Image (tube, rainbow, N blue to C red; front, side, top):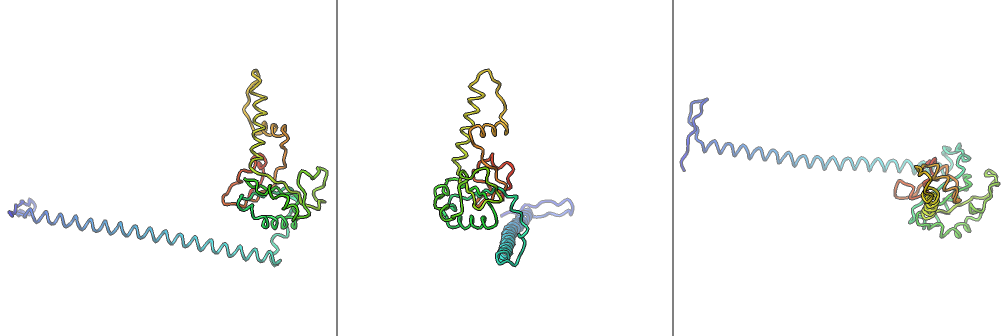
Length: 246
């Protein structure tokens, strides 16, 4: 193979062209190796960082669970007086939202209701989307003993002197039916009358329509949600405008 010579202007020398090409190819291979090593090192570093973050978060949640378990044990054993000053009178109406799968565990629901009655809660609204608790309400009422349905409680009964716990059972269909009736009422009132001006429907107009159809349920002061997601699972929205949700 013939070797072509290239004249180097800086040095005044004839440099073999084939040797120059070999050097360039060798330099390119070295650069590729370095880039490949950097890429591999970056992947390994990211994997290690991901594992370390997961480990730190796992340890943190484990420590929090241990602290909560110890706190719960101290409270239940009476050694920790943290909740002795809790003013139950501010919670006049409590809503319990439970996922429908967990609502089938009737024994746990009864245990929860007994605990609420023991600390002084007088009125509770039980909600699950599929109405599971509504189907078992007779069994729940029978096992509690000192419980009444909210519709059986008269308005004149003083809340503080109440010796029983009043229960309301609600499902997703209850809220859906109420909204449908209110919407039909507003449609008949504002749209079937051709000459009447069409208003912008506000919260106050919707509340008046719900009252007109007899849907005037009590708004809970506090809502406790037991479920897989951070939402009220379809609880009637007009009843929780000023409700604290935990």
